[in-house]
Amino acid sequence: MQHNIYTTSCKNFCARPIHRDSMETITQTTPYVIQFEEFFNSRYRSVLERLAAFYPDDKSIEVDYKKLEEFDTDLADELIQNPYIVIKAAQEAVSQLGLMNPQGEKVKLNMRFVNLPADSKVLLRNITSEHIDQFMSIDGLVTTVSESRPKIVNAVFECRHCGRVYNIEQTDQSGKLAEPASCACERKNFNLVLEQCTFIDSQRAEAQEPLELLRGGEQAKRLSLWIESDLTNQLIPGDTVEITGVLRLQNPKARGSVYDKYLDVNSIKQMRREFEEMMLTKSFNYFRV
Image (cartoon, rainbow, N blue to C red; front, side, top):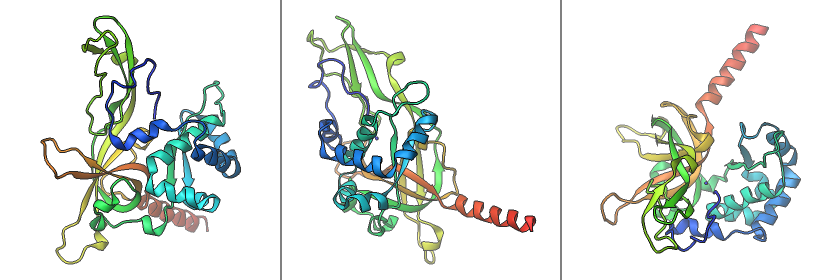
């Protein structure tokens, strides 16, 4: 994923990961935002209006990559190469459409992209450093799933000396809390005001190559999955899934040059459950006859 960044002039006080910096430069005049406004108005307007009726219980929209490619090939290609920038623009476009739920709340949706092109589907064994920061999809067998835990996405700090308040967007996936470097009063002591922070659910999982791809005594390749927001609690061990996301690197705990990979998950498609539902439907139809 994308929240309000600052309410005071602390823009220069917080160091951020490089891959997210460019997201913060997006404004209402960004061409991607304008393109997505046209795209959603022409392809997804009725879907958005239905989602607005149930927001915030439903807070994500599933976007078919093939429809985006038909609308604008360059924009679809840009999604693969620079996913965070393009996804942020899509979210901003929906926000600018001015949709409201029945309670009068402005609708802000997560973008869940599905049906990526075949050349963006990568076998776990074929993932290399060339795929870092790219949008991709994998097929995998879920092996482990952690419990869901709250994660701060917007932290509120109060200076212990003068009481100034700073809102700091948290973009570091490793869980390290970003704080103001210093206050306008030139002090560096802050209290984290938990009751004013914004939280989302987060979860970790792991997937391995589907068993049918293994030969002989070959060991299955594995990949960590980082899951957030309404995608949490959708997986159980044993699920066969198609997962779309951005390949990222996890900072090593000790200083070093070797990094672990993980997939920052954008969408999940249940393959095993689809098969089970198909079999149940067939059984139902059989008994109806």
